[in-house]
Image (cartoon, rainbow, N blue to C red; front, side, top):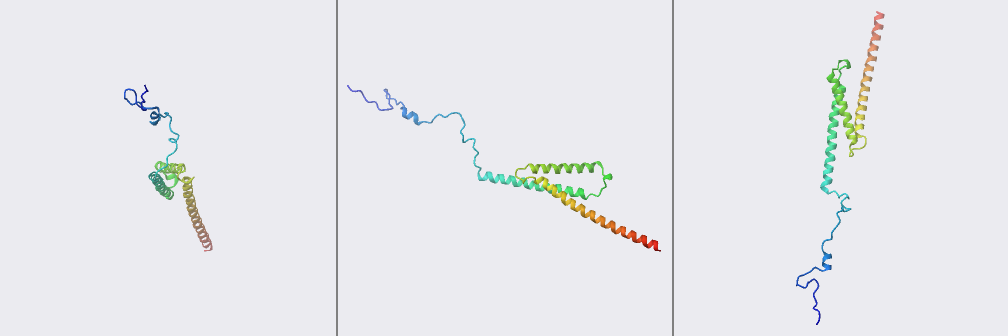
Length: 163
């Protein structure tokens, strides 16, 4: 008597048993380790890039607005003609607060990676240099006026002595 041939994948009771080949076809069990590709930075999308550009532009715009405000305040304080001995504590505190704000602004801009290096400090250096030129012009004007007055006084003394 010959042995009946059982087709692959069928058991004796007519039930199907998966073959070794078909067991290999399923999903492979993977380890719990993370993929090496997960740690790689993902390419930014166009929307991400546009959002970053928008944020940088807003930050630069805010820096410009704040710089203008501080510059106007500094100019107003420099134009103040109150003598040092006549300043009260409030006026002195306002000056110190402005200086602190200017220094803080310069440090903030200098720390900003999107701003050119040293831009915060340079902005105040430029303001101070402009102020120096303005002070020089005022001093020259005062010196010229003083010379004119001294000349008139000398001329008046000469005419008074001759009379």
